Length: 388
Image 1 (cartoon, one colour):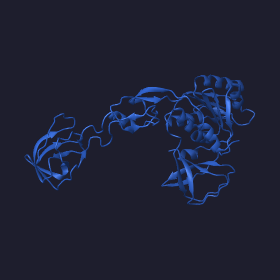
Image 2 (cartoon, one colour):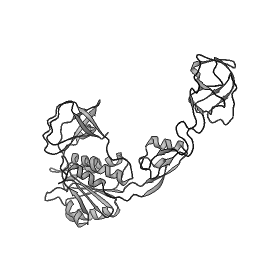
Image 3 (cartoon, rainbow, N blue to C red):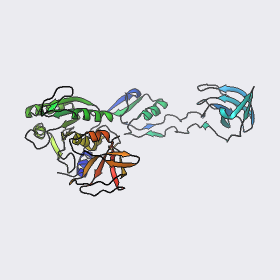
């Protein structure tokens, strides 16, 4: 059995082969850039108005209105002292413009413009290159593309980007007792939920399961299922059958498929029977079958590795420390990831911490990390992994 820190170290030290592809702006959300992006031109590429109003020649209380400039106009106007033009947000500033005055602070009579107060030089003018200069670094390699990032790329005239390919994920759940939701179940059976939780957790972070199988507790079936999944997967996720019970066949089936064990069992709660292995350039996580254990291990261990496989600069869930809102009796003999809720800059450890209990995880938004048998008092700082 190894420590949490050692398990994370082993995961991150793995050498992975990343591949690249070209994707359009419409289809690159959540992908990570495989190259730096630099600005192909100054942004803005010309001086323009920050609002609807009037471009002013010089600083006076009264001007003569000599025209109008709308966004997209190509005319090359040049203002003389005491002249003004009606201008709209984003429109190119005429030469010799001193400032722009918003229309709400002006009065117009015929062709005369009157100001309520004098403007400051440069007021409400977006200067050429004010956001980016040509050649400036916009995004570094590894940047994970967000909606705002797509907007930025589009504003630079970039329609396609080179990104790292996402890993192919295959998912296998095991268990004789499992029944698909929507089917009738008998005494001793439970509805299968881990495949839905794990697949949706992947999807939340813009990763997707290519194949999803449920296999009963049969050694040959599990062995065959693993063999087939490893042919197409970059990462194989298994849930259940990794403990030490008479029907826990996953570890042996992995061994007989030539998977090298990198670690098995982590000194933590929940999720002690966690397995990580590899076969050539394929990787395997075998997660515990209890729902809360399975999902907790995904967030702490699998998600950082998915980012690594996809070339992302991200390392996993965001981690912050918050004051705990109450005393908490910490009886755990192992370091623990506790289902928790962060509100108003405080964290509350939730009830129902059992590894089979997922409702508290569904109503919470964080995993609070506590060392073994460490007393916790109201106001203490607790490290939290934010899920949402």
